[in-house]
Each structure stands twice: as structure tokens, then as C-alpha cells.
Image 1: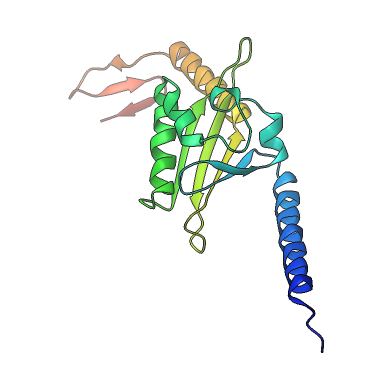
Image 2: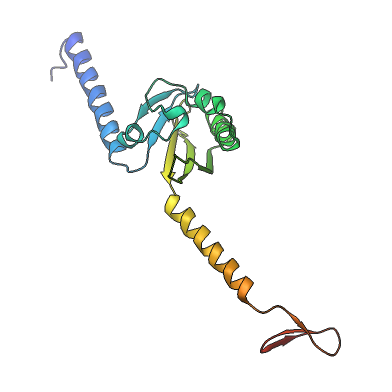
Length: 175
């Protein structure tokens, strides 16, 4: 069995690393939600295609090399502060994961996201951050809450009855 010269082995190793990185990016790119990999300082090392196509993220920037935590910290907003603090705790190994829902509206468009940061136990210098658009769910919850409030406003209120302090609603008496 011939292993090859040092240069040949090094070239195969480099080819293998490049194939691994290509596989990693292809895997990330098929995910529909924006995903980024942060280093131990919070710098974005890699981001998938969904991340690059959605400029909803802090400061509207979505490029590798920026510091995700610094960008979140620069935004004067309670949701951005919560995001910064939670992701920072994951990057600093103070917790394994973090999840937070936040608004990210554009002019004329209401949007909400759920951010999740997850530590990689076997790779402690890296954190995965993903943002999932949850606008449909939030809008449905709001619509349901409005419908419930409307029904509560239309329902008859409690009526005091004779007796030992019992209250009744139509067709229901409870003591």
C-alpha cells in the first residue's frame, strides 16, 4: 500500500477538508430557516442561503465575518437586548441553548421570528443560531385572542340570584 508523498497526503487532506466544508454548506443551504455558525467570540463563520436572502437580521447585514453579538448589542431595542444576552450565555457556555421570540417588522409588514442558539457539546468553540419566521402563528394567535375577547364582550354578565351569595349565568347556577 502506497500512502504517497507528504505533498500528496497534504493535498488529499485539503481536498477532504474542502469536501467536508462543501457538504456542510450544502446541508445548511437546504434548511428553509436562516442558520449561522458562530465562533467563540460571536463572529459569524458561516451562514446558509436563507440567511443571505433574508435581511431581517440585526442591522440588515447577513455576511460572514460580522460579529452577531456586537450587532445585536448595537440595536436599542428590548428584544435585541434579550437576544444578545441569551445568545451570549450560550457562546460563553453558561447554558446549552436559548430560544426567544421577537418582532422584526418592516414598513407595511408585521413579522415575528423565533431565534434559537444551540451549543455544540462536542465542539465547544461553536454555536449554531437559527431564526424561524413565526409570523403566521403569531397572527393566528392574535386573531384567536381577538375572537375570544369579542365573544366575551358579547356574553351576558353574571346575574345575582336570591340566596346564599350564588351567582348564575343563563342556564348555569353555581354555588
